Image (cartoon, rainbow, N blue to C red):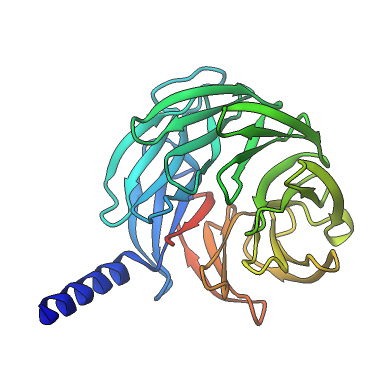
Length: 323
């Protein structure tokens, strides 16, 4: 019995190692996903999707990769407007969920049961049941909704809207918008602190990060990046809540923000037009999708330097890591 238990543990550990250490990159122009082995910083697989790929995320259990797909026809939902469901290990497309017109970004609830997607050209957000793949609710949000973030406890979905400069707060229990607040100009993405007490909204045109009391759903401060010239898109917060990293598309940099002081501690040059950004589970490595360089930058968090540049598909948009 002891020998069998030991064998089972070894098999489980081996399977976990094989499945881990992967970065998934959505390539908008080449309509594909590049799969990178983060242990060797090389592309090991390319998954064709047939439609432009933007928002991307990994399920909480690490078994599925979700990516938002959309076609070139505005203001009308078609078979090209979907959330693709991909087996993380094999790269096989398992399903394509309906998601409303022109999905751009989305968030997955911590229990893995629901997806909330922004429908950019419709001004709505869709709640999708993962078990059935069906849209269970559609909510009116701001104009040109883009970023979506789910609170760590799964209760709130924040949806940014880049034209109305608003954030809509969705109660995931009722699937209703319960609050709306203004932020700086052209909000692109949102993220929560690990304790769920704060949320951070990037404003590309405003060149700032809005700090939000996520328990009251109220802005409580603004952090300027590079005197307003930072132009942030993707944002991520360290697990200890001390640091925020913002991918500045127009300036081809990453801002390192000290959240205790509310100041920029460092600026890291990366590839051209970084959009998506991801932080490794151990907090030691950052990854940016560089849309005009067709590359991913690998950044050592301690030294704040790029340690590798990996070529991917055309116009990489988002990045997601297995957990």
